[in-house]
Structure formats: C-alpha cells, structure tokens
Image (cartoon, rainbow, N blue to C red; front, top):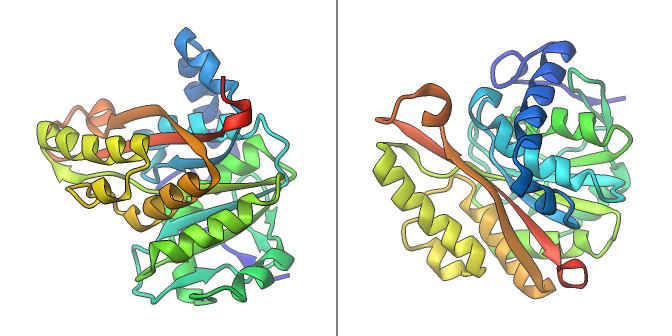
Amino acid sequence: MSIRKTAVAGQFYPAGKEDIVKMFEHFNKALDAHADMNSLLSQHTRAVIVPHAGYVYSGFTANVAIRVLANQDIRRVVVIGPSHRVYLKGISVSEYTGYETPLGTLPIDVALVAELKAMEGVHFFPEAHREHSTEVQMPFIKYYMPDVSVVELVYGDADPRNIADIITYLLEDIHTAVVISTDLSHYYDIEKAKRLDSICLDAVMRLDVNELHQGCEACGKVGVEGMLLAARHKGLTPHILDYRTSADASGDKTQVVGYTSVIFTEEDHHA
C-alpha cells in the first residue's frame, strides 16, 4: 500500500474526525434552514466547482456541492486542483493506492490512474501531492460517499483543453464525478473582490471561456476553463449554489478571498 498522506490536516481543516463531523453537521443545519435550496439540492450532477480555503471560510460553500453530488450513484470521484506549492508542467496524477483523511482512507482507482497517465500532459510528480486545493475536498467525499474511490489530479502550467479532454473522458462513465477546485479573487477589498468575482460567475453561467479572461482572478482558472469547455461539449447546464467571501466569516472587508460552488446538470434531468 502506498498512501497519499494528509498534508494540511490541522491547518485548513480539523485533524480529528469528531471535529470535522461537527463542522459538517453545522454546515448542514445552516443549509437545511434555507428552504429555497431544496430544489437545487435534489438536482442531478456529476460535475461541480468548489472552493478550497480553510473550512471556517469556505467549508459551507464546498459542502453544498459535495452534498448534492452524494445524491447520485457515484462510484469514483476525480478531484482536479491547481498547484500552489510547486511549479510543474502539465498535470500530475496521484499514483498511490490510498488517500488518507481523518475520516478514514479512500481507495485510489489505480486502473483509472493508469488510463489518465496515458493521456497528453499527464504524469506523476510526487512533490505536487502535498496540495491543499485537492486535499480539502477529500474529507467531504469520505463523509458523504464513504465507499467511492478517488483520483487526485494537480495541475500547474497546463493547457485548459487537455483538462477539458480529461473531464469529457471521465464523464463518459455514468458513475464517475469530477470536482474542480478553485477560489476566486484574493486579498482585495470587498467591493473590488465582488466586482472581479462577478466576472468569473458570469463566465461560468454563460459557459463563456473568453469572459474568464476579462478579469476573473480565480487561482484555479485553468481548471474552470477546462470545465466550461467540457460542459459546452456535453450540453451541461451550470447552477451557482453559493457565493461568499472570507468577510462572511472574519468580518474583515479589506482583504477578502472569494468562494463559489457550482453544479453542472445534465439536460435530460434538468427541470
């Protein structure tokens, strides 16, 4: 067994199982109080965008999307996020057999890893797999979908079209889900942050790749662009579940980070 060990437990999210579960229960209590969310929570989706900050700041936003994902018959989840710690060319796939979380270890789909390694721009760069953008999603996945397998993809200097090809390939399997990880703008005052973030959100809602490049400052913009290209190709419909900034948790409106969660629904399920 080769295990992808936790790298940011105790920093971005609690290191203890009970503390994580308590946070998730708190998020869901708040979510269940929103009657207007019920129709969105019952949507069919296998592709989502989620944020990756500390759970105190963006956990509620991420929780909504993963909870919707868990309503489907999902057997494996591929998490795709940008590299923050190391420079890498292309995309690195987690060539391990298990992924450690405080809630238990998730099996890695080694057959799928092999398939992805055969695709353009994909290789295994071990140093990339201490990445928080992907890791913070795994406790949510283990909590909501305890029996799924996972694959972690971390990208650096990568072509969004390669990521779109990977997403399109993955979604051909009806039991596979894709999680794209990104935060939005970083460290502007609240007015400027919301202005920049609205560009990202509008681009997502229109599936407009060109608009993404008109001021959207998402750190995972390459992954988002790949998702938009794949969504257009597959005829998926975006729905924004939540948008907020770090100011909602901290009260500090001078240096905020933006967060959103989005689901992409399939037309034949779209009401």
